[in-house]
Image (cartoon, rainbow, N blue to C red; front, side):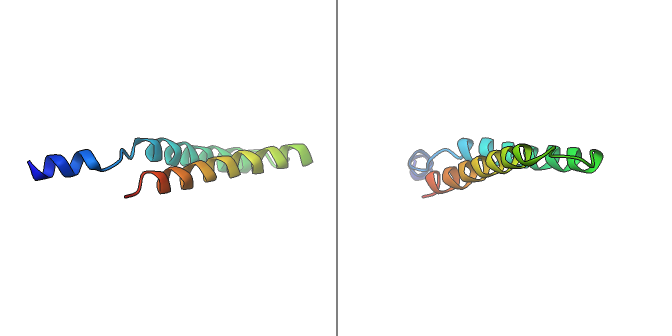
Length: 70
């Protein structure tokens, strides 16, 4: 019974798994595109877009890690 109460008190890690997984998938896709297309990210706007998406995904992963910790 005590383990059941402890399991209920612990926050769900699912948001962190989703955010971390999305960040990992983004990194793999980004490296694949970067290796196959020499002109990637196609200018200053593309560079800023890649940095913005990477920053948002990193912040989400960090935020959900903090939010789901004890």
